[in-house]
Image (cartoon, rainbow, N blue to C red; front, side, top):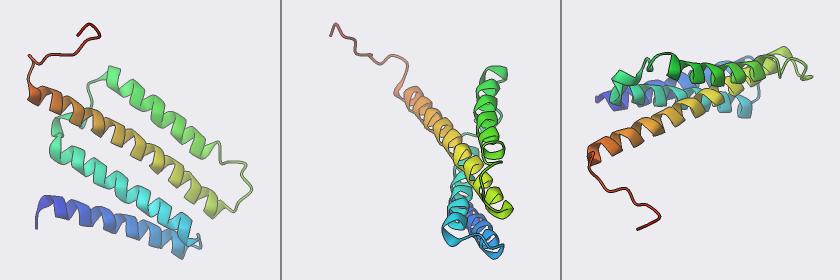
Length: 136
């Protein structure tokens, strides 16, 4: 089996286990499926970064980490504090918090991956390409 196929199967299995586990705890199927999908997509994206851009896993130091920290802090605060007073049972609050955190994480990783691929495409084109200006 190829590494890509193993990553896909593992990610989908992790998402299915998460969705099944939440459903087993009494969370409705749509919310459980959404959490499972978010987990599967985040795992797929992280494994793609690991496979294609292993040098980008740790970031570039404080300049990169501060923005990652800000985005994740806001998402975590929204998930934990924003859902604190929502009048739902504790199990649903947990599932909703997971959904918010995983959705935000998918957005962050997808944006990072888009920038990595954009940078790689620019580097492969070469340094001496012409950039169009308004005067042309």
